[in-house]
Length: 255
Ligand SMILES: NC(=O)c1ccc[n+]([C@@H]2O[C@H](COP(=O)([O-])OP(=O)(O)OC[C@H]3O[C@@H](n4cnc5c(N)ncnc54)[C@H](O)[C@@H]3O)[C@@H](O)[C@H]2O)c1
Image 1 (cartoon, rainbow, N blue to C red):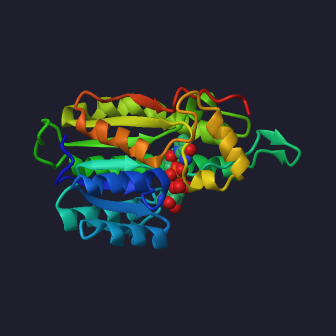
Image 2 (image 1 turned 120 degrees about the horizontal axis):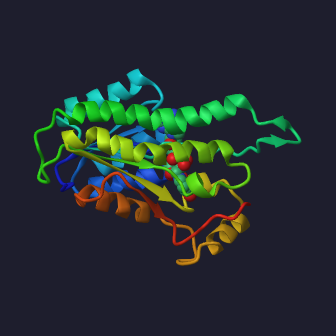
């Protein structure tokens, strides 16, 4: 599907990988609605990217707030062709530690934001996409979720995060099958280690050590490299129902 002239929703578009995806889409001539909790950063990015980019403060786990973002895209740009889910959280906690058992609320919250949230965006975006006339590839839209290589290589302290990302991997094929007769494709990107604000909270020596773990290129990934794969997924009509690792051949060690 050609990106130019299409309309995209990007959750988590106020930071990191989502921001890079929003920038790529705007540069390729799409209209973009950024959905994020971070109003300040989201509004600054939307202003910088110009009249075709809007910001909508929304919690992806809230049905009414995501519906409001979908309605905004409809009102301002007429339809939705692309939905990219990048919003997510990455808490760390062991199943049992000196502090006691893993906090149940933290486990639930991780699944709520990382699984229920993208599911909520997908269901509401797809419900709008099915109203589209057939596009240049004979379809109606493309969706992308962001998992992690932790979905299969989860490290110490990543039980909740890995479970949430594995759920996104598990949803990819059935969603592609559900939506095939409507002409909507979906792929999931499983990034390795990327240089984003999520990473910036770690000490510099730890960031450097993490980069060296990547076989080649031996560094943290750049958000633009994530956006490049998103671009290819949107443009290549045969990409559907698959999770693609984007990790420089990294396989995470236990810790
Ligand atoms: N950075 C990495 O190395 C890496 C690796 C693998 C997977 N990922 C995944 O990629 C995605 C993006 O990561 P990032 O590094 O860009 O993170 P980030 O923290 O820079 O950005 C995440 C954005 O999501 C927003 N957000 C969080 N909860 C939200 C909610 N409930 N509703 C709306 N917005 C919400 C935050 O405000 C933030 O702007 C995440 O799902 C993360 O798990 C990142």
